[in-house]
Length: 190
Ligand SMILES: *[C@@H]1O[C@H](CO)[C@@H](O)[C@H](O)[C@H]1NC(C)=O
Image (cartoon, rainbow, N blue to C red; front, side, top):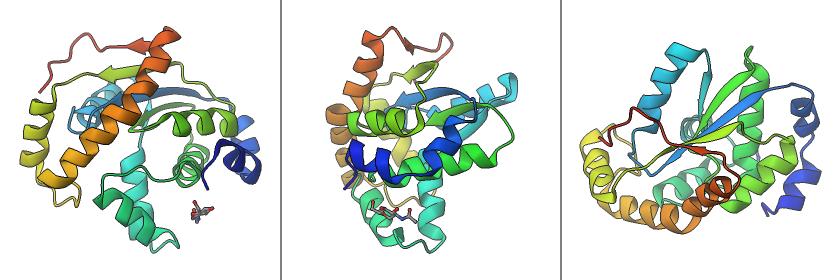
């Protein structure tokens, strides 16, 4: 489940997306680093469409999808949803949107996500916007956000940080080794 090969061979939308020429920027950073807020600013000024992987997954969960319960459990436990599922949602959103410039926030969250996305869609990001913030600050923000999200409690937050450090930072390191990571100039870790 969720291996690169699986995702690459099973998915038919991949070819559809390959025929739409798009520019993609991945927006990465720890939970609570302010990615979503910053994306809203970029959208306003540069005409990108913002796609939040987390928002797409929560909408899919709430739509009564066959994978709703699985998605719900993964989110509540701070785990990473299988690549297949998230990639399908991203592809659908990109195809449904009449724009060719996308900011994808909160994805890829591990190396497997990254490799699967690149092989399924044939798309490499233009660059990665990296919001670097201390764990202490991010925790403070998440706890005060209080938007009723099931994953904004101290126990899940700790798990999310562990996953972020172990799985997501290597993705940033990978893109950094390819010279693709940019840190926003005007970003004060909240
Ligand atoms: C549900 O998850 C499975 C396993 O990851 C996947 O193969 C299937 O396509 C998913 N269904 C939907 C509607 O996304």
